Length: 315
Image 1 (cartoon, one colour):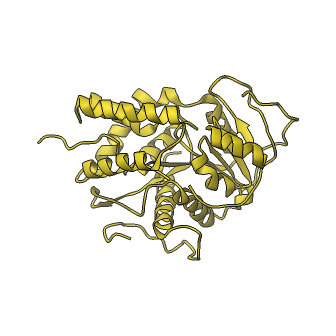
Image 2 (cartoon, rainbow, N blue to C red; image 1 turned 90 degrees about the horizontal axis):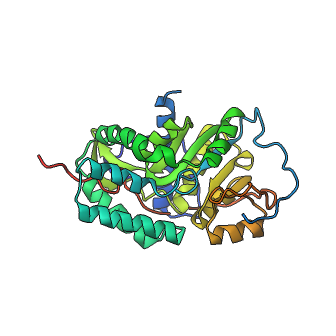
Image 3 (cartoon, rainbow, N blue to C red; image 1 turned 180 degrees about the vertical axis):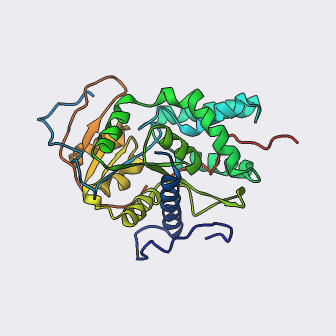
């Protein structure tokens, strides 16, 4: 771990895992940041099947729910919406806004993240955020959520999260977006907390480095695994929700995987595995296409610990 990263990961049991060392590090750092933030936070055309058993199970303290963010909980990419807010505050130029807009269009048309595409976003964000204070990002993020993000939350997904909360379970966002941005969104939605990409900071100032790698691909599942271990959860009782085939490893890790507004690859995989599906994009009634399955590891992409477009202000 970089010398400036201030994370105590002693509570995480060490063992061999089918993931890279950087993925494990990113996942464990995200889990630690999520636990800390939750402690600090204020309180389709598918064939409809037979009725599902009651779920989530009220009073099951070994269960929790993990929700992907972009296009699962919120329409579009959180980083793009954050960039819009920063542009309004004159943090960067029109040419940058055009680039961010193209990235958002690409994201929506492709339906899933491209690793090289997201790596470009990550690298530019890391260089831009260096030297800025974490508190500055949090303050701006609160305003931008109200301006651009609140109205883009899918009501159907929000209702699923609330069902878990009403059952007495913890609910976490799991996203490649910066952990600071993800934490703001989780708090505004009344969720427990967020697992997100962790950028190194020293003395409350970003160093321009990541702790591990972006919370995507294997790192996402490692974060869920680490948090479940720390919280004493039984993953076979837990649920996970995502729109992207990139999150199949995370979905496979739990006993109750759900495909939400799925891309074509995830829809196909969900059918093959008998996973449940919900599609809120066309107003179609939520449909069940099978029973939950369990097992697995993994998840990939973008974000640095700040914003897609955060640029140094002129002094």
